[in-house]
Length: 474
Image (cartoon, rainbow, N blue to C red; front, side, top):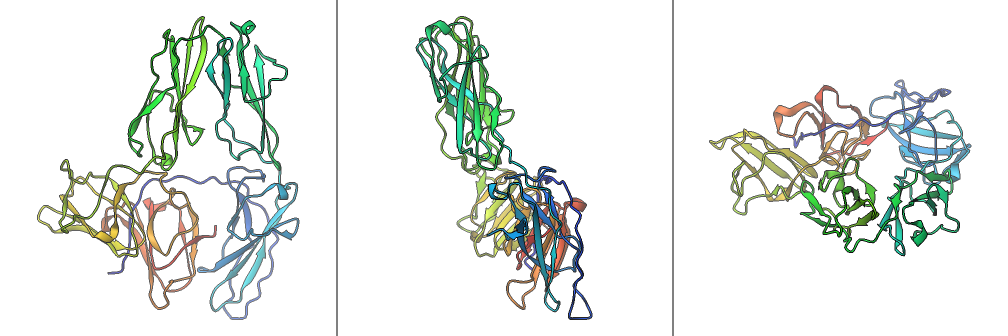
């Protein structure tokens, strides 16, 4: 049995946009079987505009199956140093220039063919993504307020702060801190930021929520985060004892300094996207006569992977499914297996197999409630509950492993030069789940350069490869 694979999860659609017209070039081939090709186009990811900082992707068009590519990007006809990948992100150096990409297609037994895309429009200024700032501290006469700036994309080179009182600029107030004056009691303070970076339009960020200057709280503690810092665990922010007690409290959670959409209560459940990030929370309060106050917690340690995990029994015995406290919880697991082969087996109550799989590299495996027990060897390492977002999305695979389409691996057309070990075929599998043979949608054996389309069609959400690496070409 070939070390085929299987598995899966959810799908995330990648953005698409502008397709550019190109002038075809005649291909010359040295054989009776020419390398069929079409001229590439450029597809800006995210936006229909070609901007500094936004990813462009080379769309290869239709070529002979198994064609592999090298890439070179150009700005106003001049090659861009180091820009030799499938995708390219323009920098300030390319602003106002027109971009093209040259693909050279090759396959054993064919004459290589080069194609150059048509030019884009001139590269426009980049744009910042920046949430509004927040004012930390207690707005009371004599107190010092501090600006909290959420992380921006990209990070600006310079930030200018502008403080306002009742909608009017406070002259000279351009630092990250502001000392509250006694005559401001009852008035509203806010702050804005102006971001700059070469190649990007300067951006005046929307203002912070205003803080009303009032009397001093005798107690106004920083919030404290409690809970296990692992994916899947729920954190709780305690606001502490305030005196006098505010009439309202509000919360905003942050992951590595970026606000988490919808995370605005005292509790927050960590997701796969929080893995290896630090979490903070800001508590904002109000009480008439005491004005507005905001306090920020200390950052947590980096979030760990899920506590739902298991590994091979020391004595090599099967592990029961669903039995507490040592049973294996039915869910999907991921393991960073070594050189392998990692083997897993789902079993019935009589010990017969429901399904099995083996292979090297990253593995995925779903334990179902109908399973009586599971078995795995030590080469698999630790099986950890899989959450979308735990692994960074990529355009390529290793020679061995299992990937979730739309999460680990972007949708698109992928090509391989063939088996990494000459004479040993590569196998690949597309599946609708990670629970064994019943989930397989299609499979194939690769002995030469091959191209396949990974787009989630036919409920294929997982991709496994054994023996060849794949690279997205379109």
